[in-house]
Amino acid sequence: MKNFKSLVCSLLLASTLPALAQEDPTKVWTIKGENTFLINQSSFSNWAAGGVNSFAGNLTLNYDFNYKKNKWIWDNKVLAAYGQTFQKETDWRKNDDRFVLNSLLGYEATEKWLYTFFLNFNTQFAKGYTFENDGNRSLISSGLSPAYLSFGPGIAYKESDNFKVNISPAATRFVFVTSPDIDETTFGLDPGKKSRLEFGASLDAHYKKDIMENITFENILKLYANYLEDPQNVDVDYTANLFMKVNRFITVNAGVQLIYDDNTKIPTIENGIETGRGAKLQVKQILGAGITYKF
Picture 1 (tube, rainbow, N blue to C red):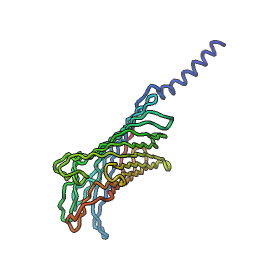
Picture 2: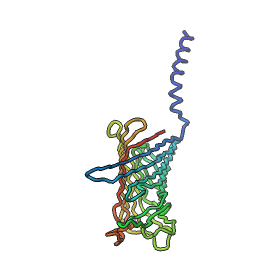
Picture 3: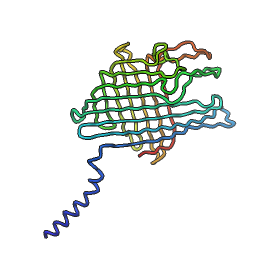
C-alpha cells in the first residue's frame, strides 16, 4: 500500500510539471510582436462612370516588451509604420509615417494603482510635403522634424494590458525641429530655434476590447496641457483602430487618427496659393486588407 501511494503521488506530481513549467514564475519579461502589411488597390478600364487607378501599401511593426517582478513593472511599446499611395496623376505619396516609443516604469501602490514615471517619443522617418493645385510641392517635415519627447512622474490605473490610464501632473515636453530645411515656426518654435520646452500635465489612456469574435476595437488617447502658455488649449491625439481577423494570417484593419495642437500651423492652399497658416484638426484614415504575423 505504501508503494502504491508513492506511485500515485509521483504520477500526480508528474502530471503537474508541464503546467508549472508553462507558468514559469521566474520569467520576468513578456515580449509580443505584430507585423502587418496592408494593401489597398483599385483599377478601372473603359469604366463609364470614370475612376482613377490607385495602389496603397502600408507596413506596420508593433512590439511590446513588458517587465514584471515583485511590485515593479516596466511596459515598453515600439511602433514603426510607413505607407505609400500611388495614383497616375500624382505619382507616389506617403500616407503613413510614424515612429513611436512609449515607456512606463511603475511601482505598485495597490493591486491596480501604481506610482509611475513615463517617457514618450514620437517622430517620423521621411520627408513630408504639402501639394498645390498646380502640382508644385513644399517641404513641411522630415525625419526628426518634428520630434516630440515627453517624460515625467505620475500615477496610473492598470486593470490589465488592455486597459490602463496614466496621469502626470508634472510632465516635461520638448519639441524638436532638427532639419535646417524645415520651417520651425510651423510647429510652434520661435524663428531660428531648433527646440521648444513645455511643462504641463499629460494623460495617456489605452483601451482594447473584443467586441465580437475575431473583431477587436482599440482606443488610444493622449492629452497635454502646457502650463507655460495657454494651458486651456489642450493638445489632443486620439487613435481608433478596428482589427478584423479573417484567419491566422489574413486581417482587415481600419483606423482613424485625430490630432489637434494649437501650436502646429497648417498651411491653407486656395487656387494653388498658400493664403495663410493656422491650427486645424488633423485627420488620417487607413483601411486595408493584408497579412499579419504575430508572436
